[in-house]
Length: 243
Image 1 (tube, one colour):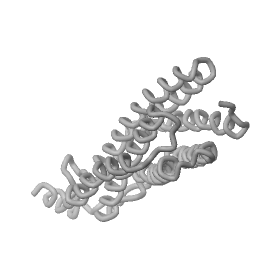
Image 2: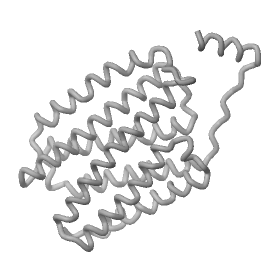
Image 3: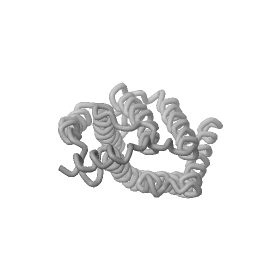
């Protein structure tokens, strides 16, 4: 496969932005706030470089092995990031915020079911069985992560939780990324856009790089200070939450 100048530019920009974000998370010590997110970004940097080296120095088979093993690790880390957001946003003092579980359960039930039905129903635009299974696996993971993340975002919105924190900034970027990835994977798998594969992948990469740039700025800037309660109200609030 011959890469165009745009393909090469987008591929080169991706690890550069990931590296900048890793430096921001490290130098500003934001990784302590979002450890799984920082791990996912650092893993993505190594994954991208490994894929590039496998593509340039190895065979198609080597590249495919590196790509899919790395994709599995990326998927598992995305689940960990969603869990990290849920824990940080929907728990207070080790306890779930009242109403959080009831908001999450319908999404957590519907998400895997919808992902399975969709991946069985679609007919991937693939030249062989292996590529078809790979396309189904990619769509399944995207749909599942998307549903899990939408569940957490919906719960945060319904419960009126703070959207100014680093967790909220992480969530905003992931919202844009997961929805765009879902749309592109659906176009690949359902509409059989074989002739537009490169264009759609460039769109995917461009969106993700825009999100990476947003995260670089968002995690560099300080987090707004939470308003403090008067001492008497703070004591009342502590007693209520412990009941």
